[in-house]
Length: 285
Ligand code: 13P
Image (cartoon, rainbow, N blue to C red):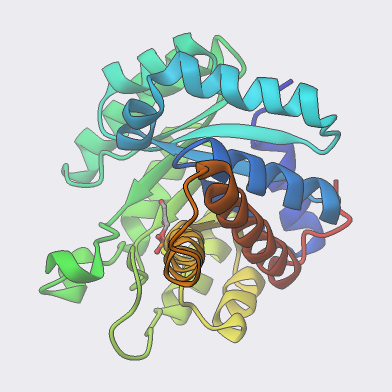
């Protein structure tokens, strides 16, 4: 059974570790992530973007796929299935109705009042079903999209975070503080001072997006400053792709997709296991 993130994140804060959100792009990602979490006895959050849900077949297919794997693999650790970057109330509603156990409403491109208003609409429909909610303040961009032209504009403001926490009942939120989706060009430069201040004032579990390529030290520092959830996608994607690429280069006679996709799944499983250990969530299930 899928569970919400609430208890996972509260436990993570209490014991100073983070739970990984690993995005599922297809069946092999879901398999690798669940197997790694079970092996490490770690709670886990399967992230599901709108694009990935569409690729997989739709929200219902994604929900049934993850629930089926939990049953068939005999997964015993807590698993949340979380809509990543839900861009509208309608999309969150669709995901909740299909059975996800957690949603992110990303209204971060709106002024803070409107962001709060939109987040509260999602809270209403999510709470009715016991579904947890993540919000975003400031804007986490993509390294290659050129979104962060002015870091001060994109970074979360402390007073906006405080307002969001005072006026909503979200379970966690992602303040944009210099992390980006995709790999980093140059050295990542997270605004740790502001992260610390935001956590001290809000006391809410923080979410660190753009976990791929962040040095272990930065991740652990962020956990010390309130990060209870760290999102990783690109590192799993590159691990899977490199595996398939080298396997097909080495063995051009291969034609059974189970051979190379199975190997891709194993590389995802290994990557997730390494991350789980870095985040400190092993044996916390
Ligand atoms: P990366 O792809 O950079 O790991 O970011 C994942 C993420 O933050 C999903 O929301």
